[in-house]
Image (cartoon, rainbow over all chains, first blue to last red; front, side, top):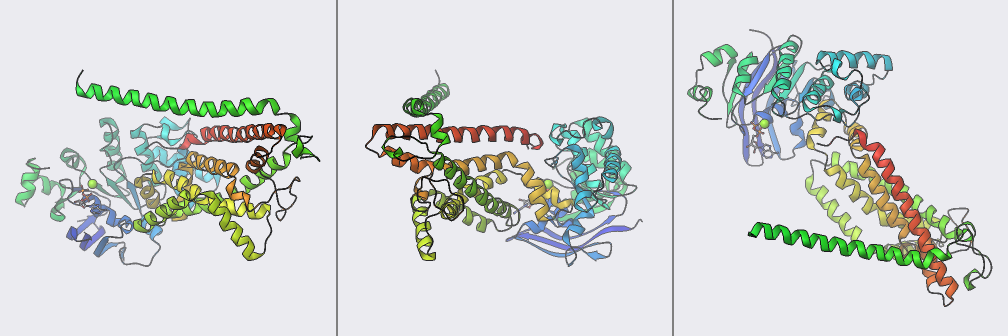
Length: 252
Length: 284
Ligand SMILES: Nc1ncnc2c1ncn2[C@@H]1O[C@H](COP(=O)(O)OP(=O)(O)O)[C@@H](O)[C@H]1O
Ligand SMILES: [Mg+2]
């Protein structure tokens, strides 16, 4: 059993009267791909937003419990929230490139953390664009607006931009749902490579995608974690009745 | 013809008629001003201040009002921008959690946009009396600023409102602070819209007579300091138009042509600027 990167304990979240997450206890292993699965509306996105404290943006959201990353409870810490968020790169359901050129999109995170030397930026930007297999496609048009890229390229740019702030964890919320099959495959392949140095948490509702890339699976239903465990065990030998019927495709 | 087709046809005709009417009316206004004003527009009008006897139809021009109006409008637009941009950004970035507060502010601003400018003029006038100030360029700039700030804020706010939450959240998760998001992300994404807001406010500022009527005073000289009174174009038009002398009334139309030309020039400039700044905008 590998080390735990994120440890979620007794996490509860409610919006006004409605409880969305019910007593979540999940351990996310380091340098593995953990897939969060479940029918839509079960709270996958909300759980992920707790991890980088985007839930702070909702005044109505009441969160209790602990999320421990690197020995620090990120829900109850006085540490700078921007430092916490920088530990995690976020890949959203569709790409949101920054309104600037391709180069600056990747350099953005470095610049705001005070790394402004041109030579340094050039090296790093190339490095991260290569890391997501985008360099060859954009090296001659780094000054073009990010909007000129295809959706699939934009999503890879967003991944590169996230990697540039040097996170330990990558949070991806259905990162391929807006992409064509080839772009999706590229992202999946990247994740498989990146997991040797990053802990990846990915939400998906595509069962086949989960089977392809998951090392660890968390299955949720109506705000509760029904079953979790190593992928092989989860897919081959599910323990709960609900998991079995979900895997058989009896509900989505 | 079935019902849906008839409906489609009806609305198409309706739209065509109403746009035609609006365009015709606008063209007619511009046409009558140009017809009445252009023949009396000459180089003296825009290069000289009124000479003795100008108001009886003798020599000189309205350079004093042109410069005065530009001072007032540029001053007020810059001030309103310096106040409005941070407020609009603050509403859309720092106050995202307090939706009710933001909606309250929006409602208030909409209310302020609806108040006629003469009320702002009167308000500025009472303030001046209270502080013992005389009519001056500064008083005019401040009054017009107060008058256009709500317009500026709401115009920028409307643009910022169209920015998707996802961009905000992406920027946050890169470790940005809220001020970094304000000026590095939201500002850049909305530059084109912000230029439109500037233009809108400038148009209101330079074209409004009531807010400067009681506050700037009127003089035949170009002001050399903020504490001096100044002429403005709307008032120049107003005064000349109410003259019994024909030549003076004709010059009122020539002055209106100058005012329209300034607004047209600024609009074109804004279009060009918008175009060159739009390229990094993302269409989500
Ligand atoms: N800001 C919010 N306010 C109120 N309810 C919300 C909010 N965001 C999500 N929810 C509710 O929380 C539940 C879980 O949503 P979500 O986490 O997006 O599900 P999933 O990602 O699994 O589809 C849904 O029932 C949704 O309606
Ligand atoms: Mg979701």
